[in-house]
Image 1 (tube, helix red, strand yellow):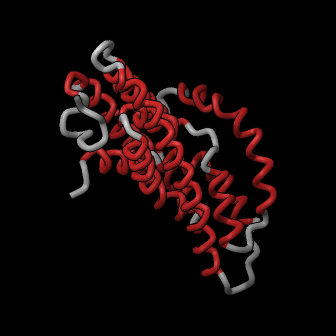
Image 2 (cartoon, rainbow, N blue to C red):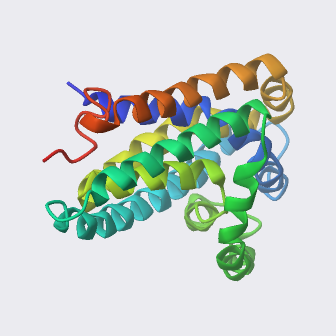
Image 3 (cartoon, rainbow, N blue to C red):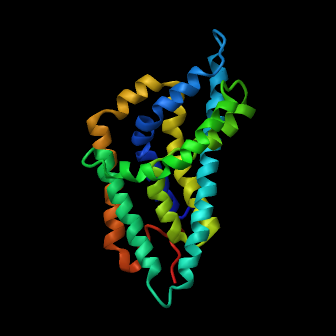
Length: 238
């Protein structure tokens, strides 16, 4: 039976996809344009878009493992200072900020995204080596690089990966999140115009943001028990 924490993160990725399509739609469009297609061969797009996303999710998984490993250091001080609780509260504050960001109430997370722009400025030129992507062998590494695109949604969940207290749990957390984002971004590559119209719908974005916001609020309310049963299997309890 899947742990409830991973299901929660999957749902956050799924609902946060409204932000993914809005932010990455231009990139997905560029990938589609740069894909060499022959008339009547639209089916060739599926393997390429799937490869892009497998690469992207793999990058998230590796980043989650790194954050989980870093979080392990905080767990070592559990009996001296409530570092774990502090990290947990910070992670849920990020989720609240993300929920407000998705609803359009605030643009606070756009500042967080700026933190990754220097790294992206170094990585982005590497993508040119794989464009235009004609094969899966080109699309996969392109997706791996795409995974480093600065994104407040990704950073919010990575903050939670710190609280997992283990590299493997951090990796599983980001894998679950990445799989949650997959439907939106995979469809965005094939139905870009229609999907972008949907996610720009005010009601859709507001509803998604409010649900993600609820996750963060619940996390803060249950902070003394580190999320109670919701984050079962994800947050390391002592």
